[in-house]
Length: 106
Image (cartoon, rainbow, N blue to C red; front, side, top):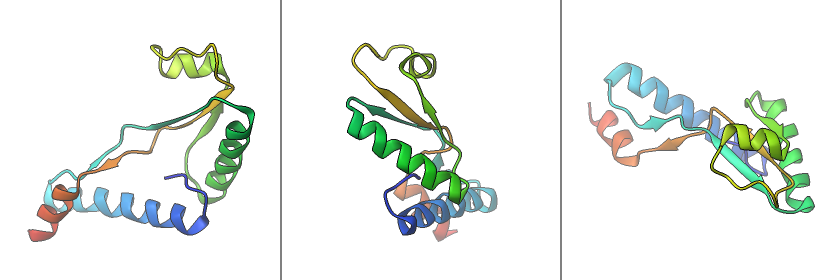
């Protein structure tokens, strides 16, 4: 749900909440909360993720900045030898468009 603009963050949050509510009402899953891991392979990207993290905090999106060692704890198979860090957003996920349509059909 973390995106460069506040409008995008709000839209993604609204959509996530809508999918969760649809599942409660229809028992049709359209949202999978699998988390997001944004890996920074250079300092500029790490700075961008820090900015997104700050924006996310403002909008109440759960996330945290990780060192390479902490990134390895979250995703053990990742080679962290050449990364600067990462941002982890455990409440990120994916939407199944067919699930949304089927839920609205009910």
